[in-house]
Amino acid sequence: MPVYIAMLRGVNVGGHKRMKMDELRTSCEALGFEKVQTYVQSGNVVYKTAKQAPISLSKKLADRIVKDFGFSASVITRTGDEIGKVIQDNPLLKEKGIDVERLHVTFLSEVPSAVALKTLDGLPQKPDQFCCLKKEIYIHCPNGYGQTKLTNNLFEKQLAVVATTRNWQTVNSLYQMAQDYDG
Image (cartoon, rainbow, N blue to C red; front, side):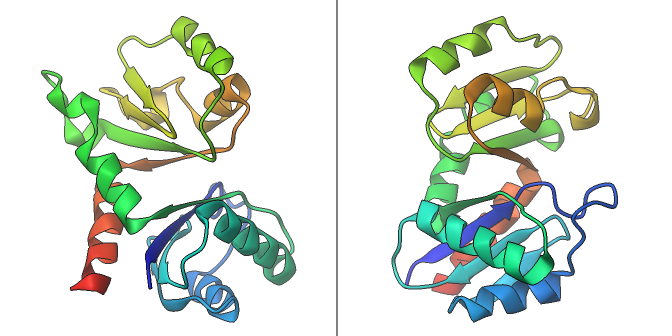
């Protein structure tokens, strides 16, 4: 059975869309997901289930969240292997002066259109930098993510897709959790 990683958008942030991770695990188990684990309180779930399209799994979990918690939350799902490729393909790691403590990945629900991607050329960057590769945007924020203009809301507006961001440590931790299932 493949390992999947679901990332919820905007839960447990600023007192909004509150959910306990044990209750989220219960919701996932009710969907038939196995060996469900959560990571930190921001809605990261690692689990095994029969092979399915990640977008289908995202929809199932989003629907379950509405049923169990009474609010909607966007869900972006990747396979463990896809997260490994995200780590491996990070172009910013090749840049000079990149502090991995200030590195983030914005996960997109789908590949944006070429026209939408062109709109990114005009975005304010300095001192931040970013690079979009298919369904991920790699971001380096030397002053911290809290200071950047390169937010989920900005990318969602520009690209007309759902976006959720995780710091580099979280991305690597989620991948390690996925790897531990296979070990």
